[in-house]
Each structure stands twice: as C-alpha cells, then as structure tokens.
Image 1: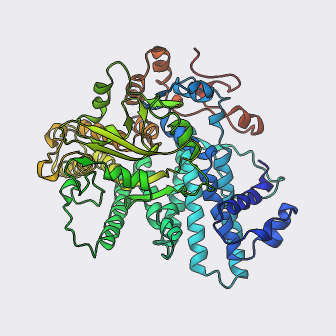
Image 2 (image 1 turned 90 degrees about the vertical axis):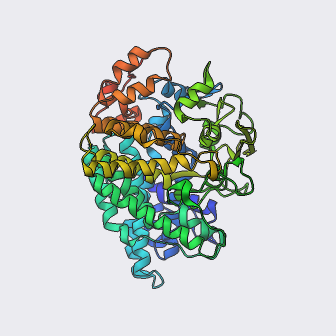
Image 3 (image 1 turned 60 degrees about the vertical axis):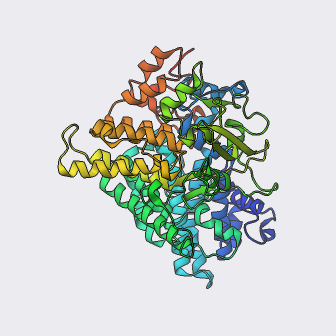
Length: 575
C-alpha cells in the first residue's frame, strides 16, 4: 500500500465502523497530503477517526489471521484439517515447510497500523493547539493509546521474525526513505518497554460509562491496565523477572478492585476456595451442582468478561465486521464437528482420549471439552456456549449457539487475567536459584508460583465445591525443573488456540539458549519427516520466520534469516 493512502484508508475503515456520528466531511476525493495537512487535522474528532481506524485494521482478516497463525500453527497444538487443501500456505506452515514466498510471512498490515500510530503522535499535538475542546489530558491519553498499539504491533513482529525494521517516524510522503535495515530483537524490546514506561501513567484508567458501546471500551480499547499487561509480558521476555512480577501484581490488583466494585451490592456470598482468592470466573453454574462451563460462556461466548484486559471486539450486528480468521481456521456451523476446516487439534489420532488427557491430565478439566469438540475439532471461539454435564459421573458435553459461516462474532482476546497470572508464575519459577534443594526464598517463590497455577487449574475442575480436591499436588512439583514445566503445561491448557503457544515455546528456547523443549513438543504431532525437522530446529534461527521475498526485493537493507538461505526459493524443509 502507498504510504500516502494510509491515512485516507484509515479514515475509510473508521467510517465503515460508524464509531462517530458522521464522516461525510471527508468523502471528497482530494490529494491526500492536502487532506492531512490542511483539512483533516483540525479537531479531536479527526484524531479519534484515525485511532478508530487502527482498531478496525486490527480486526481485519489480514492481521487477525496472522496473530493466530504466527502464535499457534507451528506449535504442538495444531495440525492439518480435512479442508486444508484450500490453503496451501497454511498447509506448508503446519508441515514446517516454510517458504519465503508464503503469503503469511507478509507483515504490511502491522506496519500500516504502526504508521497510523506514528502519524497520530506527530499531528495530534497540533490539533490540540487548534481545538480548545481537546484537553492536555486527552492528548496525553490518545498518545499513550496509540503508543501502546504501535508497541503491540512491534511486539508481534519481533516475536515472529526476531529482527525487524523499527521506526517511530510518521511516513506521510512517498519521497521518504523507508527501506530501513532490521534492528535487533533486544534493541527493539528495550525501546518498547521504555516507550510504555513513559506513557503508562497518561493512559485512561477507566473509560466513562453511559452506553453499551462505552461499556465495551474497558476491554476493547487500550487502558492503563492493558499497558501493565504488555509490560508484564515484555519484561518476562527480557528476563527481568522482578519487573514482570511488579506489573502482574498491578494487573491482578486492578482486577480485584474491579471485582469488588462490581459485587459491592451483591447479597450472594462469594466462595473463593476454587480460585485461591483471585477474581477468576469459576466454571460451575449456581443453578446446578453437576453442570459446568460458566467461565467459557462468559469469557469466550459473551466476551468482554470481568477477566478480560484487552480484546478485539466484534459487534453482533450483521452489518458489522466478523471474525473471518476464526471462521476460516477453526470452524463455523458449516464444518464444525467434521475435522475442522483447515486446522484441528494435534491430539487427535487412534487413541484420542489418552492423547487429550496427556495434556489435560484429568477427566474433570472443563477445558478438555471446551477447547476440543467431539475429540476431533477446535471448539474455542467457534461456539458461544459449552456446557459439561457430570450428573452421571462422566462428561456429557453440550455445545450450542455455533456461529454461522461468515458471521463469526467471537472476540479475539489479546490479554486476560489468567494469562497474566501464569506469566507471573513463570517469572517466579525463574527466580528459584536451586533445583533440588530450595533456600527459604526459593521455597517462597515456588509456593507463590504453584498457588497461581493451582488457582487457574482448579477453577476449571468440574466438581462442586463440597467435593473439590486439588488436581495438582504441590509435593509433586517441588524442584525448579518441575515447576517450570508445570507453568508451561498450564499455559498450554488454559490458553490453547489463543495465539500464545508458539511464542511460549520460542521464549523458553531463547531463555534456555537451546531448542530442546520446543523440538520435543513440536515433533509429537509429526509422523513423517521428523529427522529433517529435528535437525533444522537445532538452529535457533529456525524458530523464527523468514522475511517474505517481496520485502527483500523492495528493501535491500534486509538480510534473510540464515535458516532460509537467500530467501529466493528457500525453505528449510523439502518434501
């Protein structure tokens, strides 16, 4: 896309979402630089339009499918569905046959949003100088919001490609030099953290209430808590575990405060035995002691739950955008239950149940039934409700309100509370200094980490409180290696199919300085070509993605990932 068209296309996206009352002033066809410099940047509504366009672009199939594929499809969670022949690019990714020509190695939509954010940061102060209704606090909040969106885009890019071109300059003229060399992962990560640290206190803490749309702003737009969540994860990748814990605690405290506020007038006593005192939504329904699935229905069915921190929200109206990425990759009413569309859980096979419960460990884990439908298809995001009836002593899942093809409205969750709790647990596990013999401080770190994991696990157990027993026994994990592995296992169970697993495996590889754990996990889903894949994964370069050939052609300053040769025809697995 031409850079000079970015602002106008952002405005077009904004009009389509009808976030503001009118866009008619901007429908005339005029030279774009004139619109930007002379007519567009005059009042706060103009700034709001571009910010709304950033969110609309993040909802686009182009970007959302990359969040999904980059974060999941190379992992041990996903394998080939019956209809994968419709997309050879996805098929090659699932086979670890990565090509520099693969469509899903393109990144233009991420840089599109980055440039829109940079443009707001450049022009918004001038708008505030013109518009007396645009206050200083609103200006700072807008800059904090777009800074966080820009940093989130870069965070996706470096976790996927490692080293990428980085700029905070607004490109508004085709004559500007844009073929930047790639900056290193560590350099960009440090800049992202510094940027978020500089704007975090300017961000909106709570958006004003007053309408159903504004109610959704609390989780569908960047808030101070969302920035804390981003910092929590970024510090974990930086291996700054104390700061990771610091920001996790700020998120947890914010959610506890929200929970207390939401329930201050409740006459029903809350029993937090199931969640170890954390404000997690439990899986049980109060109207029955044998029906479970309330957490799923709240988090993934209704969306924007009390656990949510930031998610891309799809409005239910037919004329509003739909989640095409979920519809394509995970399923819809047309193909659900028929081995998925292009992807299915990697746990299917001749002995399905044992494979599933190798991951979920026990038959009472509600997530085993909610994530995987009929032991053969992905259910998360595809159904609005998944109920599990244990009245007979064994699970009888009941799935309802499946989305129609082309009308999938499930939100895409970027951060939620249990994710942050498990990031904190991971940081705590890394602070343990000894493996087998714990010091007093090590024991404290271990117990805190286990309590977080246990809370997330226990809230999903399909048993009434009166019969509830911990399915995780602390004494079975009291070495550093065991608690580290437990955290990884619980993140897989809790966040399955949410675009997290591959990044978790990459982060562990970078921390361990080897790919042993990643390779062991990923090879479990393959029955052929395993030697070639294992050999390639011995190189750390191979866990990152190749630059697309088109990027190499237009940007001569980019050097292809060494795992993929020159990039001209290279893949690292030939079948």
